[in-house]
Amino acid sequence: MARGRICRLSVHNLRFPTSLGSHGFDAKHTDPDCSAAYVVMETDSEDGLKGYGIMLTLGKDPEVVVGAVNALTYYVLHKDLGDIVGDFRGFCRVLTSDEQLRLIGPEKDVVRLAVAAIVNAVWDLWAKQEGKPLWKLLVDMDAEMLLSCINFRYITDVLTEEDAYEILQNGQHGKKEREKQMLRHGYPAYTTSCASLGYSDSTLKELLKAALNDGWTRFKVKVGADLQNDIRRCRLIRDMIGPDKTLMLDANERWDVPEAVEWMSKLAEFKPLWIEKPTSQNDITGHATISEALAPLGIGVAMGEQCHNRMMIKQLLHKKALQFLQIDSCRLGSVNENLSVLLMAKKFGIPVCPHAGGAGFCELVQHLIIFDYISISASLQNRMCEYVDYLHEHFKYPMVIKHASYLPPKDAGYSTEMKEESIKKYQYPDGEIWKKLLDAQDMCSDLTLFFS
Image 1 (cartoon, one colour):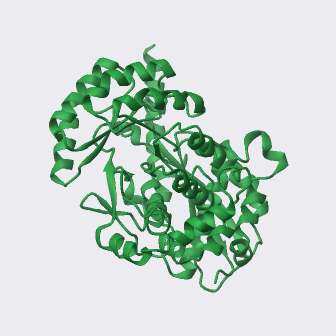
Image 2: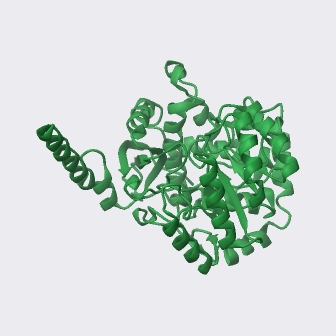
Image 3: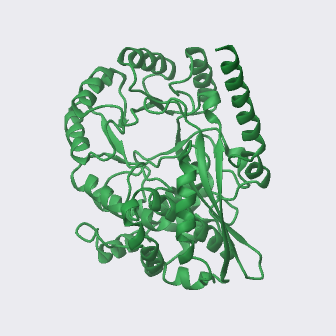
């Protein structure tokens, strides 16, 4: 049973200079540094356990999210953990209903990100106190307890609490067998580690060869900056992986709607399963138009990692604007809101293929997708979870990939806890790594001024 009064909530601004290695380079982000607002939640309970929450961002973003977390601590400090999880729906509604923060959230934008970091820490602490990894905590909950965590406000036109209860009850059939299957084989993954737009052809070939030798069969490629270069790189990749392996494309919102349709018609020869984020994350009708136009080519649209909230995903599903739903373990207000999205996806018959990568996304989202298979979807058809191979060394309980699949975590918690030495090194701007980088930048600036 969850216990302890929350007596301290601290938040760190962490940045990892991944741009130095061109990791994550795509058509919209040409110098991305993976960053995070990292929350540490402490209680006065005798067990001394702490909860760790993380919200992944890029570059300078953590400074804004850290400020929003601090603005929300009023609703968290001195609250009893048992009371929070006993009325999780109410707690989340309070966090997302601050009238003084409505212009910058709280059902979207920066406040939503801060809510995710805080609530991630609550789930981590609760799972640790129960002695279970988060996926197992969720799997072992009965339908009533799971539903009590979900805020159905604004989505009852497509998913009622009664609908959700029926889905969860149906998920009981074969549940034990699916859990055994996950423990034996894990959840299928795809890799995005090989084909960053910042990699040279030689690096691309080297990474693809290594991935193929490791048993990878599903690959995602960044596209959208230059059509002829995309055609050349897609041909190189398809030739290397062969006709039977799965290829996905990601444009990172680079195109207008007509441009997306035209561009993808030129890339259709490479048989991509989907095009991800072909246009603005905010353009639901645009994604619907693209989905309809690409259907005859056998290309689906993947979308969801940038969605602000459950209402936006509701509209995407209702308008048939996507064929693959990509949940995000942080952006959607943590586990609670992702539960509602997983249930909506099940009702609409849309496979969930989560977004991951950066510092911690893989660690977190593995819990959600394993729970989804065991308790909700009961299917692996056209389903896979994204994987990238960097920054896992900073986590105390890093995810484990075997035979191109996520193995279910065994350690208690949400896998959010980072190593103390990593926090000290990468905290911005006072961490050891950033002191060196900033000093080097200052030296270069001084030399430029001297010689100008």
